[in-house]
Length: 526
Image 1: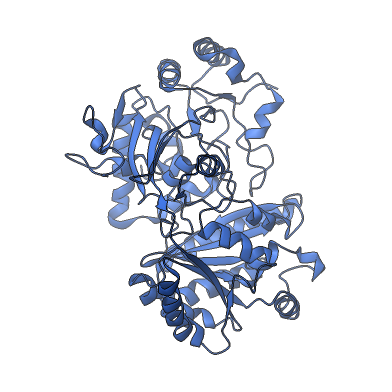
Image 2 (image 1 turned 30 degrees about the vertical axis):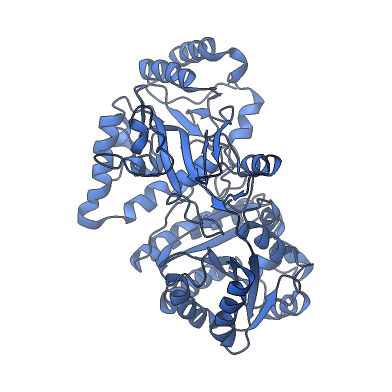
């Protein structure tokens, strides 16, 4: 089957460009000519059709010189490249490119852990390094440092950080914990941010800033450059660790939970990335929906109550952890009991009491920096395995939590889907992650899920809630909602795109940022 190509690129030009790239880095690292392996780079879980966004080719460089050679050829022929690190971000598009006809630039071979400094508690890694890989390296070398993993441990550290991912330890804001990047621009220019631009420095991974403007953020969630190295601060192993769970009986407890947790987070009584988790999210890692309900539409309240009873769960389940010397943790736990534990119907559970609970155990591992794959069991909740995450941000207030929950639950049920969600409580914000689960083998259900997702974007924006990241299929729509002052931010992004990448070869359309030669057809800001 012939590759789908952009309208400005002829089959002959594309073939010539790919041949030149193969000659530059080795033919064994290029997939093209309709090779069935190209299908492994599609998103097999999304609301899009099964063959949507299959790349025209894949090329896997193994270093900066390879990347620069590829960029030179891509600029000459205007071949669009779509960089990925590990390509495991399946709730938001996985390894699939923004549009068919792109060449995936797969950085998986660049998977070297370049340095781990135990004294200063940092690591320097390439984009292909996964959370599992760095964790195993620390364990093998008896290095007393903890990573902060994403829920599925197979994800890439650099990719997750650049997409503003969050985790579960006190180092849960991943971009906040990065320190120093090495970047290749679309024209092949190589530079380093922060202290890394100073020759012979030993401060690149210990101080985030350099002299002049701070550019690191420009290369997160953008298509302005390819990050080839990144420093990450790691957490020194504490002298003690105490995970806990508090279960709550009522749906409307979400408001008082959120109000109560805010001062505890701001004052660092609860130091880590804490999560208020819906009943079905916890249940879905252990059971399938059909074990409790075989009908159509959202699961009924009677089945929810049976799940609560069977697994000793609440309508809401609050997970957090304490770290430090045992006497200090015990004193802090008493504060938790007197606040979050004092809400009527609340019950606090210790690790010993939940030692046979798969949902508790995988979160306990994440909160101590141990990556795992248990949460991927959510895919078994309904047949077909389809899922996509809707992720609006709000302040940490009970009013906002209930407003978002009721809005999303209402629409979800109207469209025949379960509400499955969690609130990740950061410093002063909440990431509300709604996992829209659907049967991807059912065409009507897949389209219904797609329609629901688009509706939620507009309704959340109208209520003042913006998504912090989104699936490939909805990037333009989400970008459009950030519309203050006639979309001034995205018009600036377009100006930056034209300056960094005048030929528009790097990830066209990522985050709704289109190059000039594609703007008339695709951009909503022009």
